[in-house]
Image (cartoon, rainbow, N blue to C red; front, side, top):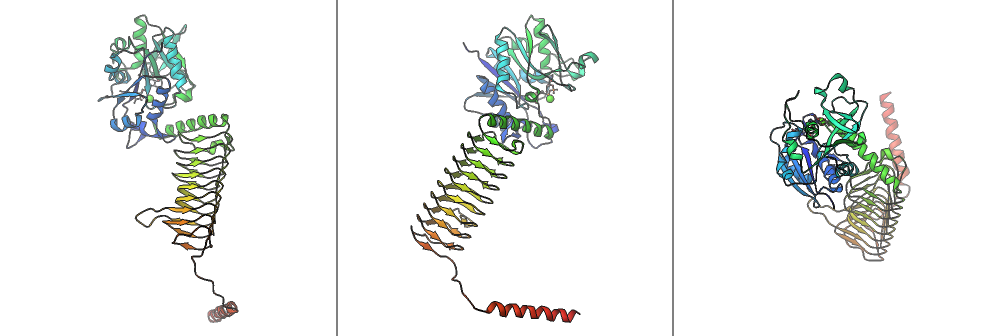
Length: 454
Ligand code: UD1
Ligand code: CA
């Protein structure tokens, strides 16, 4: 029988050290608010309900946390009176009675579902409190885990620790799983007689033990339980997230030539045998199918790249770019809200926006779809097998038929039927010998200037 679980997520901090106009848990990691990462993880650890304990920016944080697969309630902690007090803000939820109460922090976003599951499993294995700990050579600032014979005796906060206790390198991540049937009984006994005058959640350990409970610690990798207090830590957490996801993708069959230079979003999907060259940035909403190649220095967001397609180097795919199999978008091209058909080529210095490019068409260098009239956007439709000569402007709305040819340098303002050749430029004029006349005149002028200045 599966155990019920309430996750209580503490996110009432002021984010003072972030020096930010918004709560730190709203800052994105891989393009997704920190709090949403925590929600993802507790959902994957099968929490049946979530109680958010909020302070600053409560509405925005609740909105960022919401997900369709979780029942979420928000509680407000008006005054920050410590982690024990914060958990008790969700008293009504805890009082409903769950098998497990999982305490997580909104500013500790890298915890994996496996770690939460391990804590829940240890709880199910006849323990009453399972504290998630970690080992660190630099424990300053953390609560220390005082363990004896496998039992966690106490968590000692830095300020309240003795010289000896401060030497302990096994620390409290702050996260824990608590027997939900007894949680309130113990939480209600937490006092604030300590160096900070706060209600410490960590005191629950000694309280529960005095009541005969079994309390243990399970360790997590330090990188998982990293918290975010300032922008430097935010960047460190981002780095760990990126490394982790790149590693997963490489193990799933994606080639990255210089993985440390590739930036992913939380939802980037890369298929097996996709090749990602150095310095590629993926914004949100990108899928690259297997066998596609993303050349160096490309910037891609909200785009779909089918199998065998190639992008870049130095290409920009914006939202709604949809590249069919074996198509090519080359250097210094920008594609927005446009379909590039199977095998079509957009190779050099081109802007394709609000457009359909048919299969096998070739878009010459410097072609621009003029999609914007200053007020509205208009669509360009290019059929299959068409050829657009270099440096053409296609003034939308406009349609170019299948297999049509557009002469280089054209400004196309009218539809071009299938199989037609369209010129939209001034006819070339020739003046034989005229170049010599002009050159000699210019040389004479230069000589006259020189005599004068001598
Ligand atoms: C806490 C732990 C410490 C642990 C450390 C890990 C306690 C007493 N100490 O210390 O053992 O090593 O985390 O980072 O629990 N919060 C609220 N309301 C409050 C207080 C805190 O929502 O009234 C939230 C904060 O926003 C934060 C989390 O709880 O997300 C931890 O609070 P913080 O003040 O950072 O705890 P520490 O003193 O670092
Ligand atoms: Ca902290």
